[in-house]
Image 1 (cartoon, rainbow, N blue to C red):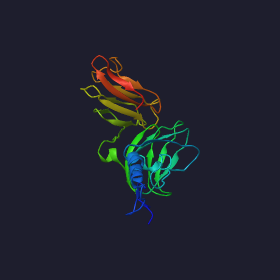
Image 2: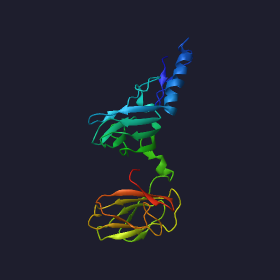
Image 3: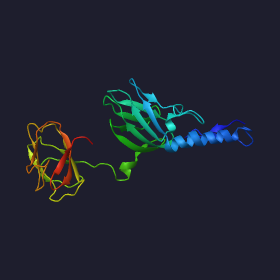
Image 4: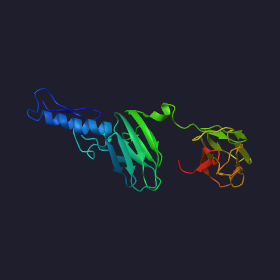
Length: 242
């Protein structure tokens, strides 16, 4: 009776008495290629065209290229400007997915031809798992994902706030915390694209901003930025890239 293969990692399952003289080799290949890639494999996948792209999922011990879907971490690259669908098998698995595409495209990870999807934004990494039917974001479920709030008027921020700022009803001030420690961070995004006409003022609340003892006025539509606290000499520093 011939070998069969597991549903998820496509491991070769040998029957009793089969493969005399080669059983050890097949077993070693299972460990060195199947298990090792599934536990510690980092695979670079170049995407092109309009997609969708289906990850390979072949039986038994294989090179990384012959079974891309069993890899532990997948790095997507290429030059694409529109969202690209990558099709995964509908089996249980945990993945780390990094969207390193040039051109600004998001990656949509889809289970099978029509199944559940999850988006990996351009330049971002997501640690996800699937039961074969649904995707689950591990960081979010662990309470480690970002939570955002929206403000339309005067507000005193706290360290860790991520704020969509809506000044469409008029300019206002968001005041920084009265106390701060190194590494404290607050993020701001122009929610409605109205900062030019209706400015956001970031009140320094006794701390310096960019080393200056003055409030910060933001007048660029669509601005998005973070402030990270350094020390009393420099205060809050601008961080443009996350």
